[in-house]
Image 1 (cartoon, one colour):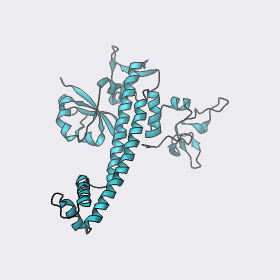
Image 2 (cartoon, rainbow, N blue to C red):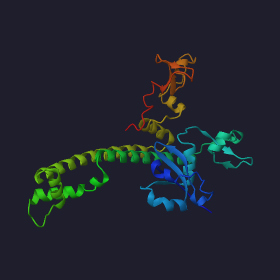
Image 3 (spheres, helix red, strand yellow):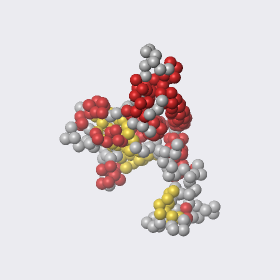
Image 4 (cartoon, rainbow, N blue to C red):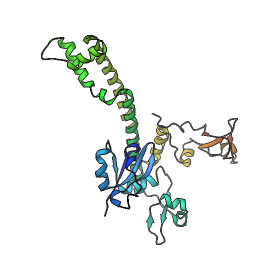
Length: 309
């Protein structure tokens, strides 16, 4: 019998291996995405297949306990006291699948159950793990940006710095401190070795400053998510930094969204949509959902800021 594992990994790393369980119906080669968010996938994959493809994945991944992955992807961000589950005709809880949702079968057996502290803790843990991967994935991209060179050239930086320091300290002709790489670059680029050495060390210092800055930024952001241990608090951070809307009721409670009512309790049609709405050519919210332009609610400055860090 196949053993399945659950991992969070960048979509580009796992995409070539996804098969949605259609690998000749051999569960030993199962690899399917069960949740997607901001360039990351939560994947259900057989142990045998994961071990086979591991050398090609190109980076480490975050492994998640099965129940945490299933609860997390089902109730991500939910703050209600009760949640929907799907039960079969004998009352056994079944995982909701896309097929059930599309076929309408799910509606026949949906029931609500208490959202227990244990379930909430698993969802919060899943959200924390996901945030960590989002942040690390994004800052890895930022690192590639500040390098702004090929991996091959970047791999020579330590050699360049070492030889530049050697030359500036010991000068030319010292047989114990030769600088073959520096000699070659100086000749090819038409620099004196002194000018080239100083240029290399200046660029190295600039890079170290930029690297230190993004490392500090990433650690501060990671700490915020590590210290948030409830779904409620994580929803706030997801909205602030990832531009993902928290549930409407939470947003209303936090006064981040209008409840659509005037002070006298009547409904204000211009607040239709609460978090997001359609706006007409004059910039007014339109109650007809099939006309106008879809845009963020102007009273909620947090929406639409994908990766706001």
